[in-house]
Image 1 (cartoon, rainbow, N blue to C red):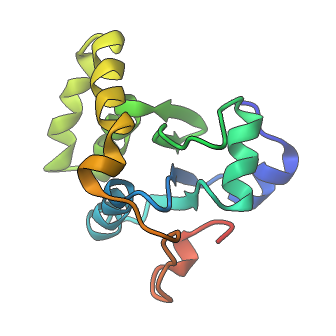
Image 2 (image 1 turned 180 degrees about the vertical axis):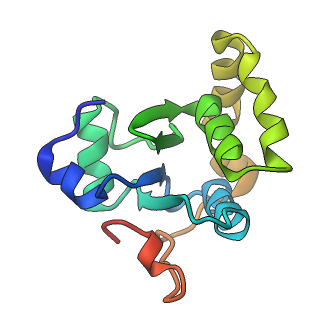
Length: 144
């Protein structure tokens, strides 16, 4: 993962999730993490924010299509279902058990993830604006 010093300074060595701020499914994941990440391991970056767009650009990802779920944990980047499994593993029990799915072949995991990601707005909906964190959780959002 190659991020500029400016970005590294902003994220301050925190584990974080980059998510599509207008996607209802993605926002549901954020709410899930806020509820079950009792140790507050993860912070959040909205993909459509200036920081999110910068990270996408520096990682060579398309910044006009936020269909890649990105988790950065212990300096390592995980995407798609590997990101989901890394997240669930970090949150702990009982969610950690689902991370056993990481043993599936990468091609199969990516294919499954891509089917949902490409249809997420149709299946789950889309907001008109990005999620705005409440004052109680604002400290967990980077660059918001």
